[in-house]
Length: 425
Image (cartoon, rainbow, N blue to C red; front, top):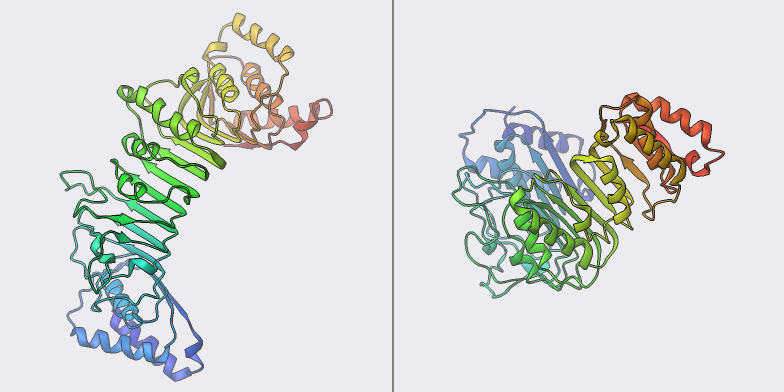
């Protein structure tokens, strides 16, 4: 069924069964079927159906549509446009094509997906009244002028009530340069009330245009994902104090090792983070040098590269606030010889001083090494014994049953073991 016929059928059902449809204040549409149907119907027919539907369901303040079919998406734009004067929340996750000139200032929550390759008709949106803005597939031809008040451009463009800003970048393979926030025109922006900033897929130093125009004392939470060079722009900020800082860094080349330590030490050493400081490192072409780390505010670390067992011990010892550690692989090559295994056995018996870090979740990925099973199990046991706050440990399947028995046998002697749940990865 084509989208126009579908909406017409919905309209007839609403009229047939009547009821107090005026009390409906939100509409959500989701389609999961792709269609190759290309409508050549007169645009006035589409608008007429939407207007009649809007007359029946007349008090809508929120519209959300996730349409696989762009034909459906365009129809939903026509439908949402019927409520241009009353919409407070609009979430459209496909191409936008409106026939209205602007939304009313009551619109405060906007989620929109933009596509560089498609011509899009986007109404003017009042920057001054938006409280939440979420932009998907941030394209190379994006323009901040969409948010200028219809009465005329104001400089700077002030998002006076915006508290949450999310920018989800998608790299256009046809673009000669990586996309930037100001690729279309340099905009003078102000975000004086911004509390939450979330940026993903960022390839270059695109945060500068945002962070330079926030009152950084107001920002409470930052979630950032992208290249090291882009994270560098974030490290240049001057957050006096922040509740939460979550950073995900794409693979780092060996040539960027010094900058990696400089940026991450600034983010998780110099910044005062009240609650959550999370770092996810996809890969580095160099082994982490624990002596170079100053991550004193870090509470969660995900590292998608192998790490030697003794380096893991040093790492935990260097992160006093660490609550969660997730490793792709813990290697036991240093314990492969009989002499090394014997020396480790003596340390296991004597080194019972707990870590300072309050680790609650430990995920070790694969535990790998040319050493006997009891040495592999002993390495994990050693970490469990030295983590008095540990609640969950995730290990290879072959270790799960053995560690469960270890917990059961020694929990009277080492009481905190009774609180640990052993799970297979």
